[in-house]
Length: 227
Image 1 (cartoon, rainbow, N blue to C red):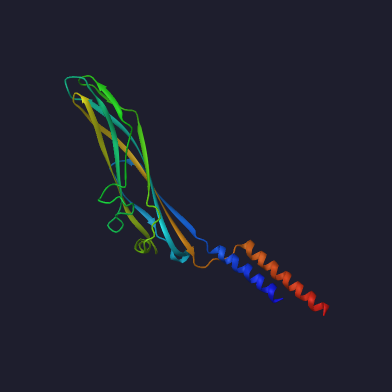
Image 2: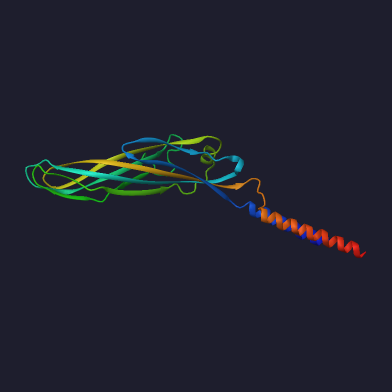
């Protein structure tokens, strides 16, 4: 009898061990596409420590822009060249300035549209069709205790997201100027990986343990009756 009871004890312990496996929870913040240059606060909910012990954080960014480019020939001769719009985006604050390890105040995201080629006669101007581009970035797994502590508790961590749209023009002949109208958005996803503090066996596991205990009781009663 003792050996059977011991075996059931190992079975129960195994289910608790499965419950201790690392879990994760994610939150998403979406800034809809709007005319740049904008500066908006990205609020990311902190990790609730009642869920367990925080092991790591990962923050991913995804941005897309849409732009139209207008080029004007300012010279008295034909002007040729190409133009593109560049999007720069910073995400962070004084406390979490380098979550994305860009360093030196550099933008976290920096991407461009394809080049729009032009050839314009004197006084002529042209506007491109809608041009698009996108870029993503990730912090990778953050495990340092200071950052984990800063993202643990109640409320939110506010990160400042700022955009700057740049006009890039390259003129081979003549003298041309460029203007652009650009919109951009940003999706931020924060994922917390953690170890639950108080794992609970799944209902199917509890049912299996219960049926095992019931069978053990029936076996004991049969042995007692035979005596």
